[in-house]
Amino acid sequence: MRIWRGDWTAPGVPNGSGNVLPSASVTEVVRGMGMDPRIGASFLNAGIGYGGSCFPKDVAAFESISRDLGYDFGILREVMKVNQEARELFIRKVEEELWNLKGKTICALGLSFKPNTDDLRESVGLAVVQRLAERGAKIRAYDPQAMEKAKAHLKDVTFCAGPLEAAQGADCALLLTEWDEFRDLDWKKMKKAMAHPTLIDGRNLYDPARMRELGFTYRSVGRP
Image (tube, rainbow, N blue to C red):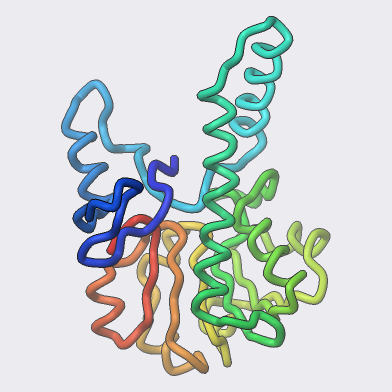
């Protein structure tokens, strides 16, 4: 679930009234919300959006049925809008770091819509890779289970045997699916393999201070 529309990374950012808001972290927001036992924090993970065969279809169907019955279910339209915006914001971060995508080499870690499956239906990671490839980026991709299925959807993408191979010569690495295998990656080795140590973490899998300590330009979702 994505509950943050953007990154407040500066010491203070202006709001619509011209006042300055303090910097904020989605991690702290989730921790605060999760203290309420009626809510909990188990599924309040910020990221680049939801996917899969069920939830997107069910939300869209529920909104459509409500509209047919004459009820304006605006909150569901907003959920779908925010979910789409999440991937657009992520792609914008890639563009901000690489400037011109054409000819740039990107290491894509994860293609399935969630860990522990080869399911690509409504996969945000797959959609992001497709968009970047269409804009001329050279994609080197790795997913523990979904690569065979992904070959039917992705053209001119290099599929790799592991994360380190995917990182070879990369101008930027993208974390798209939070597989356990990626939690313990040796980022020192990954950095040596990459042309430029830039990581954009779409699932907030890594600690920002640690990644910057390792020398990475590091960006995540909703965290300073």
